[in-house]
Every structure is written in C-alpha cells, then in structure tokens.
Image 1 (cartoon, rainbow, N blue to C red):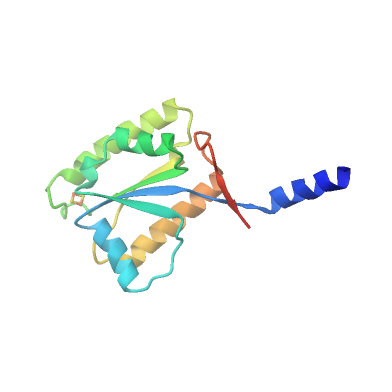
Image 2: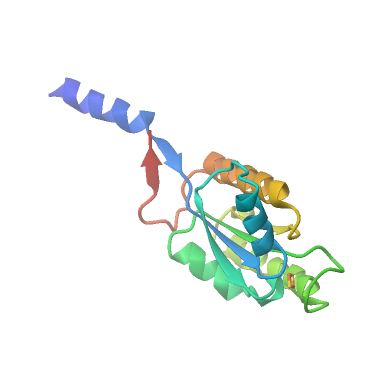
Length: 155
Ligand code: FES
C-alpha cells in the first residue's frame, strides 16, 4: 500500500505545470503580429488564448481581473508601439490602466509578474513568439495561480 502511495506521489511530482495564459491583443498591431507569426510559421509555445480587442487602451483592470478570476495563471496585454496606435493615444491609456491593474493584482495577493504589458507591431511576428515564450516560461516558474481552481499538468 505504501509503495502505491509513493508511486502516485512520484508520478504527480513528474508532471509539469502547463500555464493557462490569456493574451489581450489589439486588433491593429499585436493581433496582426500574432497572425504574422502564424503566416511565417514561427514556432512558439501554444499555451495561451488570444482575445482580440480594438485597442490595448480598451483593456480595463476588470478584463484582466476577470481572466484571473476564471483561472488564468497569467495575463498579457499587448498593443501597438507608441506613435502607432490606431486611436492615437490608446496605448498611453493602456499604460495607465495597466498601472491600476498592477495595484489591484497586488491587493489580491498575487505576484505582479502574473501580468505583463508589451508592444508588438503587425510586422513583428517573431517578436510575438518571443514575448509569448518568455511569458509562458515566467508563469511556469511562478507555478499555478492561487485563483486557478484546476491547474493543468502535463508530462
Ligand atoms: S490600436 Fe493598437 S494599441 Fe491602440
């Protein structure tokens, strides 16, 4: 009986945490950048879901907190580089929103590294892949979010 319990523990320890990432990408730059990554067949980590928004400035703290509440281990907000926003100042607004979000995430007792703000243009498919790979690795190192009721594990 003890051998079975030990074997189960070893099997569980051998399982690797698979992060659940939500990426909010603006329609005009980052979503197109993700598309470019796909068109160019760039290989990168598939453990994320993209939600397209019209602008990174549209991603309010409520969006990020809702994703975390529903089990996201990490949330990426990505938009156009400064000067490239389709709505002129949307990404400056995104910086303000993100700072507020950071404060709220800390208030909830979560590590602020669980959220990230990045700028990726439509031409930067390779950069999109790098950002996703880096962020997935960062969240994997942090482990499952305390708010995630069902963390995923793989082998
Ligand atoms: S449209 Fe991309 S950040 Fe505003």
